[in-house]
Length: 204
Image (cartoon, rainbow, N blue to C red):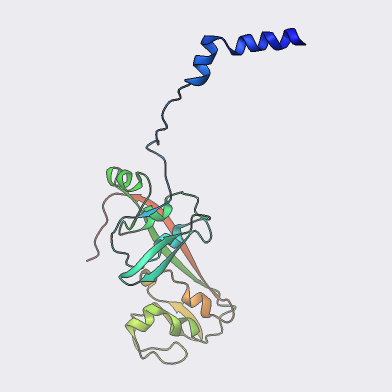
């Protein structure tokens, strides 16, 4: 027993071993270029499109709150999975994570949202709650009558022949207000996220 102890003691006290142990060096930590940290504000103005929240796959990871200067995204670190989709979805570059914005600039890529409104005519009872509650409709026709009837065809949603009908899907902002106000769950809004390459085309 004593012999074994002396042997190990001699091994540990060897100059070569002591130097390796006391002066061990490791390579410095370097953040890889593809690393995505928690999103941070870039200082650009948030226009409250809420695309960041729509794109986020982690429930409760991001919300957009009212601040004295306007609107501002807020990241909840405990829920965020650092995927960077909120950065890519924002049309104004309000957030950044790692080299996401830089990569999007050089690759000329962006994420685009489109929306689809599906009306189940078997469930729809033509109450017009969806058309009356729709924020887009309120802007176009602030005096829309009860029941979703209006005198203009420029609306997003309208009630005709006792059923809700989508007239101008391109005006949908994906807010899901119509879906939330439907008493029979006859209307659903689907948010479609697509990655595209090329410059953004300005509407005429």
